[in-house]
Image (cartoon, rainbow, N blue to C red; front, side):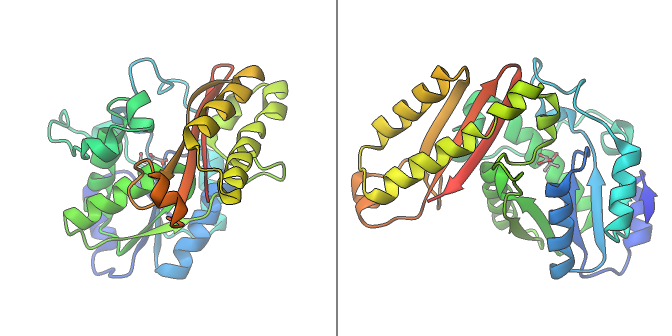
Length: 279
Ligand code: PAF
């Protein structure tokens, strides 16, 4: 595996490659990331992964400085997955001058859910993803459904900018007890780690109620947040949305079987976890 940090060197290395499958990451790789690499392999060749902790997508009080950085262990894992190039730029490589041009997702998609609680997050994500795509020039790129809203925003960005990159969605990779794998799980204490699967259990309970035909989604959302709060969580949201545009469904949408997804974000101690479940 070639490890490349400069954009020019990456371009030289990738010249003529027309079927590149790309998996962007912020490192601290776990089985979830490796499952993205395996899915990438089914859709293209060679595989390029990136590791870049993107300052632009962190708020001033968020965990940019303490975000886990495990470069050497990550390299070993990617080698085993047969990744051809690891693009690991420094901040100077990727942002040699202040990144003044930014991508601005529409407010009805970028300003809701995660966008409401993490202002600027999706501007940071789409800006770096567009720049990484411009460097790697992938034919396909794989994103996990765990970051459901991110996946949808990136997909819409590609469509609206007519980028030649197809976005492939990967199922969320879960631990045996249901907890979605995430680099931020590393922040959990032992008792918090034992409690963490309650988030996914709650999503399953909400989904089961909706499937049974419970039409009062407001009450469902409120009660499920209250039950998490009673267990010591601080929920930001538990929200039932239409899969197509992440807007709230009407009673008619629910009655007509509109495909839905329930999304959640909640803090357990100092750690903010997100998860979702398609209904
Ligand atoms: O999902 C992530 O790890 C990041 O948001 C991404 C897509 C690598 C952009 O920094």
